[in-house]
Figure 1 (cartoon, rainbow, N blue to C red):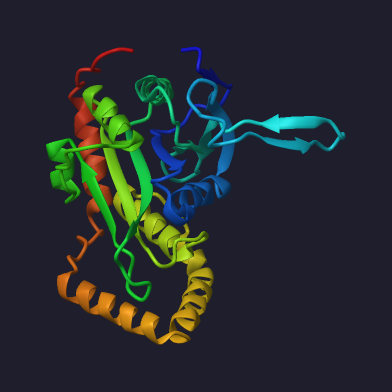
Figure 2: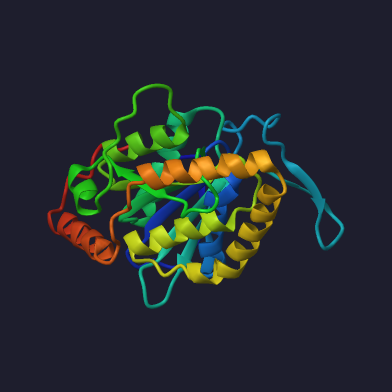
Length: 290
């Protein structure tokens, strides 16, 4: 597939493919920050690049000009980059980061599928963040879904029920599921009145959920000081305005009365491992080929 350029990279140990896109599904940049956190704490090497040419409207996501260390002018294009991340002592991961494409979503989904197949990824996890009516003073909930009934049952995830206009993540999840790739979608809620990046509290919540569900050591606790500082700044801004204080109090009452607790995560990673092991032992149909 000409849109994908592969690089030499070491063979990975039972990798998971983690995906996040800058754009609508990346409120406060919490999702891309979470996967960048994982990449930066791994032995990361470039595995593949999906060219932005033909997929991205450059008037909406412009390339950036810069000078390199030798003084030569360079153009950085908004390509999608896949990093192979070796993580000694645990399973490896592939981290895919890029701008949500504007064009040819079906072809782009096929390009992602080719990366998943060539790498031997056992599962794909799409990670996102969305604006929501939640207060910053409460834990930011991470919800998840999986189309595979057995996978959703084991990890206590929802089955997708939405019907209507969808985004790239919806298209990608459907394409991967049709190709018989296990795929999970995780998304964190962002307080709509604090939409600007960074949001370390939301990033921490995603990293914690990835560790809890997928058994990946993410080091999310290292974000605690940044979370405390962020919460203090938002508290101060809210406290300075009476209407804001009243509004946040109302959100707190709403969440406290309606909150659905997330399932406990102690056994989720073990359930995932059992699911993948049984699937591998069963030699399932590889699905349709691109």
